Amino acid sequence: MTGRLKPLRLALPCSALLLLSGCLDVPHPFAHSGKNGPGLATNAPPSRLDVPTPPNALLSNANAELWAKDVAQALLQQTIPAIAQPTRKGDWWLNMQAELRNGQVVPVYTVMTPQNTVRATQEGNPVPVGQWSAGDQAFFALVAQDAANRITTALTGIQADDMEKDPHSLKHRAARVYFTGVSGAPGDGNTSLAQAFTAAFRDSADTLQNSAKNADFIVTTTVKLTPGPAGTTGHPQQHIEIVWRVVDAGGKEAGAATQLHDIDAHSLDQYWGDVAVAAAQEAAAATKQIIDRYSGRDNAPLAAPGAPAPAAKTVQPAPAG
Image 1 (cartoon, helix red, strand yellow):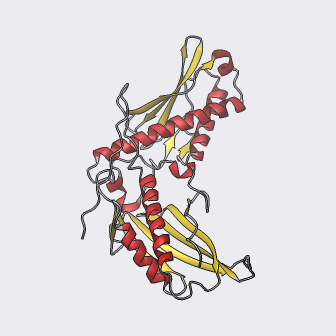
Image 2 (cartoon, rainbow, N blue to C red; image 1 turned 90 degrees about the horizontal axis):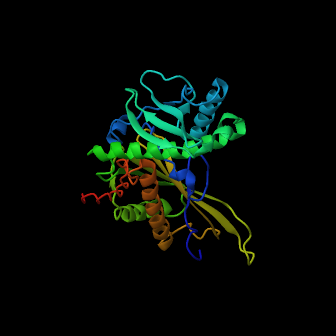
Image 3 (tube, rainbow, N blue to C red; image 1 turned 180 degrees about the vertical axis):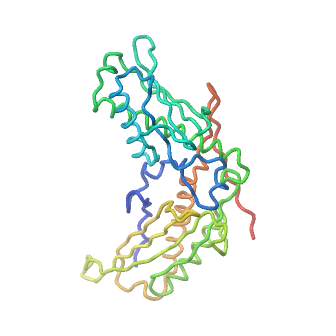
């Protein structure tokens, strides 16, 4: 085989085989990580955000209801499980209001706990009074998109704030990762890729362990070979696909890194050599990136009013052992 495997492509549950995109940047403030979830973010919000029809919206009842529905829909598109419904016991909820300021209407979004405690407040873009009161479905859809971005930022800060206060969260310790190994590779690929990945990952801030017990994340790798094009000089080729899948403690997919390449047919039927090392080094770096973004440990906590947000902490490498 000539050359290295093509660079990794990172994929997510919401869209297969994508380049690293904004989809991966979406925080998971309501994610439930199974029995180990409390260790990732203490006091994490439950798996639903109620969006009741706002009574102080400076709108007709019909338009106030439309505003709530559009905001809930826009939040769903940001992977926030919001529901346009009255507040239910035990749910976090969104208190939406509209305020008159200098002839304009300012939407105000406040994230509330089940105990009706304010956790974060964001303001939307000011809108002329006439435009606000005469708003239609298209108008409120645009307002909702602006709201969803701001509310998601607030929820990200809430999650990071909770993690900052939890000494056991991934902001303060290395992630425990269980690597199940490699399957489907020809030749010595299963062994060579596994050994190279293990060696490369040990250089990261996170740590590999020998069992799935108490693991924060599990990495599984599969290799698939299919017939490829004839090749530029008429030599047969094969198409190789290596997928490094990362799931959290609850089995939810955190992300996937995929390597794709066309190789000379049967060139990996025996020894992988440097190809395994190159592929595994890229995969180890991508796995850490998936863990960082999915866990939210690099997100900045909520800043005090008027104060700049603190810098995200760097996770210290785990001790050898």
